[in-house]
Image (cartoon, rainbow, N blue to C red):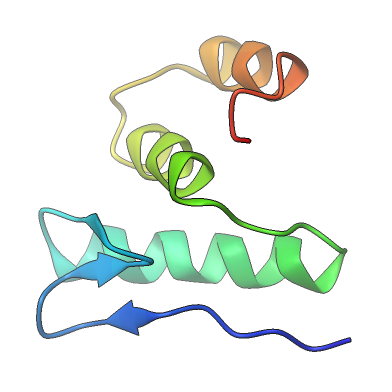
Length: 73
């Protein structure tokens, strides 16, 4: 089943989550799309975590730990 999410390139937001630049927004949108194809259902918290990983604010180890904790829910 195909589902859509709100992406606003003018205001640099995905599902209301603010991004600092278009490059990070697009990278995150691409990552989300790939994961959604596999069944992932994004939440604003999940988008924040992916954004922070893509921007280098959290490490891969921290990203994996958050995923295991299901912190994205």
